[in-house]
Length: 116
Image (tube, rainbow, N blue to C red; front, side, top):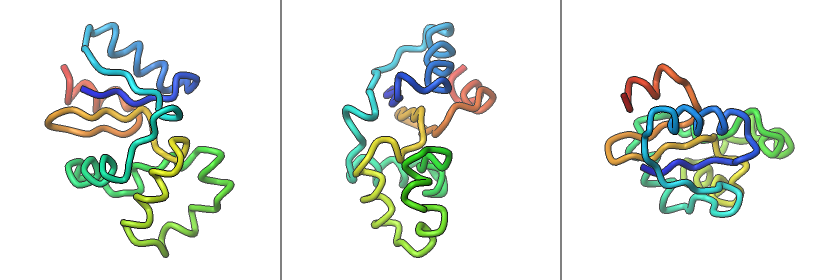
């Protein structure tokens, strides 16, 4: 399982602690140092069953600076995925990529359901 995080993010820290307490093994990846690629995002989005907006860090500074709340609705899915791949700070985190599910953000009940 891949755990993509931004280590300074308090939500990511909570998620990491949650995984560690349950002794759930994962491969850690720093989102700002190794941003997901267009290919990865396309695959994960396709497998997730989630709306593409769930992959955006809508509360992030970068999202707000770029005015994406209004711009995304006029962009194709392909354009949105390419945009996500340009900057890890645009991507919702933490992001869990497992063989049979993808999770964006940390919602403990959802994580329990999938991993315990």
